[in-house]
Structure formats: structure tokens, C-alpha cells
Length: 500
Image (spheres, helix red, strand yellow):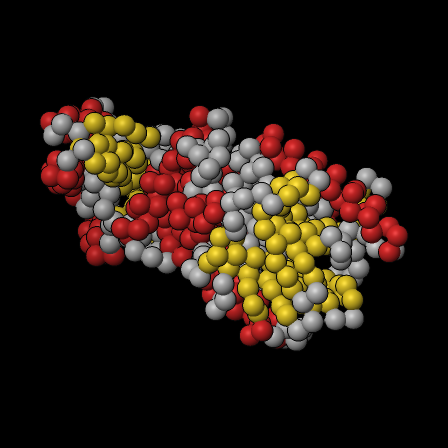
């Protein structure tokens, strides 16, 4: 038995779901997921079944024969018009005969002869193609005075009776792609809706967050791209660049004595914009020797495959990328929210993961405070230790520390949230809306944060005699230092826009 999925668009009438279930039963298929929500879309039902391949094809054929199988997401034609009915028995019945003959779906109808409009009926319809619209209009004009109020051939005016179709069209505007792929994607997205509905979340907010995520990434490329940049000189021949793209995680460039590495690569969708930014600041990315990845999320590893250098990462990071599930290796591994979110954000952000990789050794060398050290690497005269996290934010997440220079890369486990701009804060909320939490293990994430704060305190004590302090290089937001119990931005932040 193999698992299959399909989407039906069924008439909103008694016994229809029963009919679909009977078809599955006849062909010995086991239905193990069904989702229908009248408040979202009164006609669309999602199914997942286990059956033989032959039985699945027979089920699909029967549903298609009945007109129930959703096989296309082509835009429907939307038509809204006023029509003037004669004041006699049967007039409405005769008018509806014309509508039924074209297989149009009625979305809205308004008629009351006691109103000041008397014999005027207002109606909105959806039809499958332009030809059907023209035939209907020509037919109606022969019998009734009428006026067309709206005609939309792209489906942007479609009403809530075809919600999933409207949603698919919005996705298509963001990423393009074919119907077959979109139908599979809709099924995945419906998993999120079903799970969050069980948790008491508003499903419409889910859809809004998905579209907002895709549109935000799409609309912050090219001449709409921008970044906030910090350039901090560590010594005469050592410099660190912190680059905050419009959305997602930071990209760091570390230069020392003619050697250069990148820490995290950002989203794939921003790759060309980042290259232009490098050129603007005189960063020769052709000298890049390697990319050190903190964790598998697309905003930290998603452009790694676009650079012709080796990427260094934890085995858990590689596994998450291979599984396309950010919850892999955690207690939340079976959580459908995490798995579907991973697919969506990888799709929207043009995920291009590393292909030329080296995995950090799975062996503890020593302890740095309370955190295991599993590897080390050098950049010029700087030696970095690779620290293994507890997996609170993500399995396989690592931190990097250069004790001599007072540099600590805390990834997403310790962030100066106050340094985030309002737009970046809003974008980060979208992920939380789709997963309820950005951490796969909340308790471990808290423990990680506290452990990092202790490490920073220890490093500051060691650096005090040299007049230095630990620079906290977070996965998001500005490079910061601790001032008392609060994080404070270190140095100046430059705002970069293309051709500036």
C-alpha cells in the first residue's frame, strides 16, 4: 500500500462526501486524512489515502468522471452584472436555466422587488473560460435588459466560494510554476491549516502569513533590495562585516591577513544583490575560502550552493537539508508545521543548499564553559572554536568563538531584538504564525541562551585587561555588546541601497 493525496471540488449538497468515501471503499483504499472547512472554502476537500497504484488511478478516474477531482488551477472568469427580470411567475426560474446551462457557479445574488430597485437582480458568477462568459452574455442579452458591473478574466475578484483557487493564484504570482506542483503544494499548506485550526488558530491568518512571506521576499530584491551593514576593525589587518539583508539571517564576512571566510550565506533569493553589495564595499568574494554554516534554516544556509567554495557544517544541518524538515532530530520531528514551513520557505527564498561540504567531527574536544567544543578553524591569525548547541533552536546548530579577539557568533540563540527594524520584526513574526514557535525545543532554547550569556560574561572577564569586550554576532540584528544586563549596538550601522 502506498500513500497518495488528491483534492476534490464537490457540490455543496447532502451525501457528496459519502459518495467519495464509497468510491475509496470500493477500491479498498484507506482514508487516513481528510480536511474540510466550510468557513474557508465550502467546496474543497483534501484527502490522503493508502492504496495500490492501480486503485488510486481508478479512484481518480471515477472522481474525474463525476467532475469532483481538482486537476487544474487555471484562473476562473469572474462576472458580476445587473439584470432586469419581468414581473411574472417563473421569471427567476427561467433566468437560472440560462445560468445552469453554462455550468456557472453563483457566488452572490440579490433581488427584492420591494426595494427601490424593483425588478433589478444583482448576481456574481464564476465560469471556467472566456468562451463560456461570452456565450452566456450573448444569450442573456437576447432576453433581458442588463448591465455588466465587473468582468475579471484573471480571477482576482473571485469570492470566498473558491478560496483555495484564489490562494493558489496568489502563490503562482509569487513563484510561477505549474498546476500539478501547485496542487501538491496546496495539500501541504492544508496540513498547516488543519493543525493550527486544532490549536485554535485562525486559518485565514495562516494564509495571510504565507502570502506575506512570499511577497516580502519577492519585493525586496533587485532595485528594492537594501541592507544594514556594520564594519568593525579588530586589528590593522583583521575586519568583520555584518550584513543584515531585508529579511532573514545575517551574513558575516571575516577577513584576517589576506584570508576571508563567510559565516552563514543568507537566502538564495538575495545572492545577486549580496554580490553587488560586496563589490560596493570592496569585498572580493573571489578570495572567499569557505562558508561556515551555523544551522540549516534557509535564511542561514540557503545561498551556500551558489558559491564555488566548501561549506562547513554539522552533520545535523546536513540531515535537515536532506530531509527538508527543520524539526528533524528534535522532539518536534513529527510536527507537520515544521515540515511544511521548511518546504514553503525553501520555495519562496530559492533555497540553494551547499553541495561541496565538510562535516564537523562528532567528537567533543574540550569544554568552553558549559558548551562542548567539537572542532576549530583558522582565518589569518584568528583561531575559532566550533561549539555544539543543545539543539533548542534547531538540531545541529553550532556557535563559533574566537576567544583572543572576543568574537562570538551566537546564531539564533541570542539576538539583540531591539536592534531589529520594525519591518524585520514583522517578517520574523510571520514564521511564528506558521509554526507557533521558531524553536524546536523551547526549554532547551532558554537553556542555550543562558549558557551563552554565561560564556559572554566569562570572555568579558578575560578581555577586560586588554581593554576589549566580547562582540556578540547574532543570527539576526546588529553586532552588539553587553552593557549591564542589556545588549547595545556596537559601532555605526550603514544603510546600503543599490547604486548608492
